[in-house]
Length: 139
Image 1 (cartoon, rainbow, N blue to C red):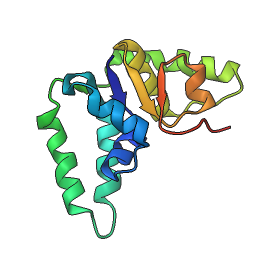
Image 2: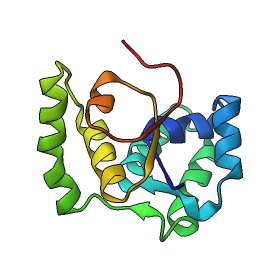
Image 3: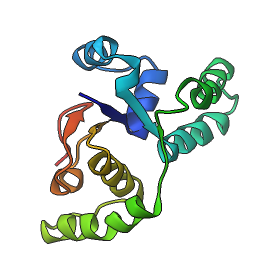
Image 4: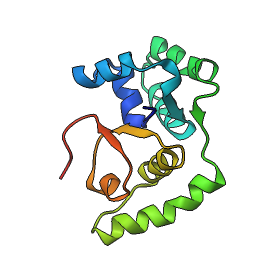
């Protein structure tokens, strides 16, 4: 199985806050099975660097991601972006609003047949993406 870490999963890893079962799953996975989207990378890097004071060790770890994951950084391609309206419509049909970042993460996971590791939400569930939840679904 191959996984896509959403921004909230990256943040949980950085903070050492992954649930034990999920941490075990990630640790058992081969490094080649773990992928990160460029969008999640940018979101978490900005969040961490804008902290006062910034978490220096965390920033250093995040800045190494492009060199440590060069073939596992998922770009947001025109094809992925073009899938977003359809996913947003699926969510809307179920009375949910899909955020831009959740929608692009779901589109990337679906495009590359990856399991998305993220905080679950009804909007994400409506997209049909395979999800490995960080916690119980929000209602």
